[in-house]
Image (cartoon, rainbow, N blue to C red; front, side, top):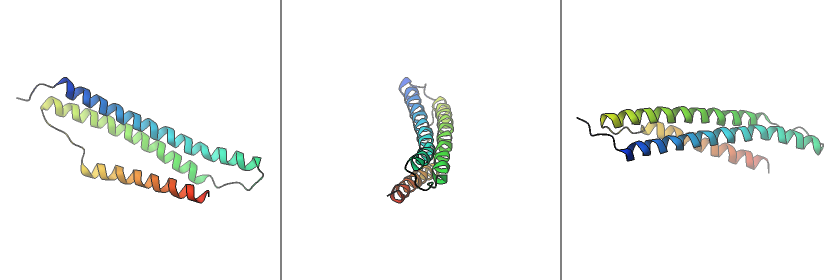
Length: 122
């Protein structure tokens, strides 16, 4: 017979879910800001009468960031439900190492794209 669910475990699961939600919102907001940067760059370019900047990267990258935010929100909901089921059964449910590596590689790729974009604007 599984142990009864402790309040601390349930509350920790809820805090973790809220961390997923905050992270998802941050990715979505960051994606929006990046996508809108192309609009700012175009307006600034027109203001100073220079050639039109290439803005396709900002829009595509911003959209990708927003979509990743949606993925993080869905992953958080799935993890919350899986952990809750595990708590009810008295089992510990962990994130697979493959999922952890995949998310880490995506964040590294985001950092690389931002670094390259910043260097190219120099």
